Image (tube, rainbow, N blue to C red):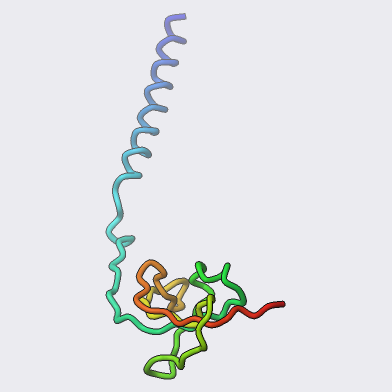
Length: 111
């Protein structure tokens, strides 16, 4: 009985030690995983979505590459272009939707 009690204490101590090591390692960041956010100049992005609901999805925007500012798209309630800080998402440049400085709008097409 005494030997079982000691084995149980050792097993509990080992489990707690492993859990402690795993828990503490969650708070340290390996050097190779640190990322540096590159500050880039703001630019125009064209909205490629089909309705107002998609305006909050940065994947619905593409870089405007023609230079300068996009032509006015007529005004209305749906975005057609935004001027924002670029970020890279899965290797593609997209706008940071929390950093929109200007936008142009057009009327939403009705089905």
